[in-house]
Image 1: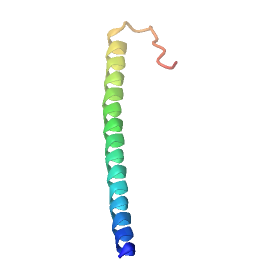
Image 2: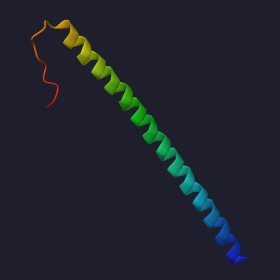
Image 3: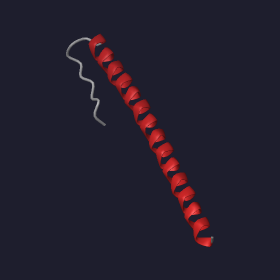
Length: 63
């Protein structure tokens, strides 16, 4: 009987660990997607500023 309880406890522990891992991966994925959208917005803003400036001016975007 004691071994059955240990197997059940181990099974629940493994399932809990898998759930935590899946939730963690979903959070990381969402953060990466959010950052990707933010970076795309920054690139668009830089392009708009570059196009609005008179020719001959240089914007150093590498820091």
